[in-house]
Length: 170
Image (cartoon, rainbow, N blue to C red; front, top):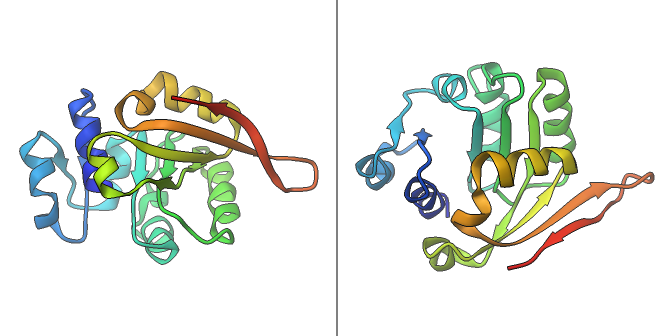
């Protein structure tokens, strides 16, 4: 779903720096004006907001924690927004990395499928700090207007269980 989401962000006026294991799969985005980054280090240095849309937690872990991965060069106060449906065991590791490297991490899996991604009709479920959500999504990148029709923000309660915090409808 990453390609249609990225395409909608470009159509919404955002400049995208991209990287993929298969550069050929990114040709349509490059033709729309996306800028190719030869490495994850270059991508992290260029970006204030980084979206991940990967097959699974295995790829997310590799892309983030590898020696020359995103976390090796992520900017302080950047946003790492993971659209991948990942293992719940990886989320605390990414949150800890966010505190260590001073970036904001939002676990934001998407649903509704590729066809809805193409027309900007996804549901995004956002887990993380409400302040990060408020700062990042509506004011910084306007993701909601580009690709989202529903957002559920989850925040940990005193028992460490995620609970609904905010719901923004259509």
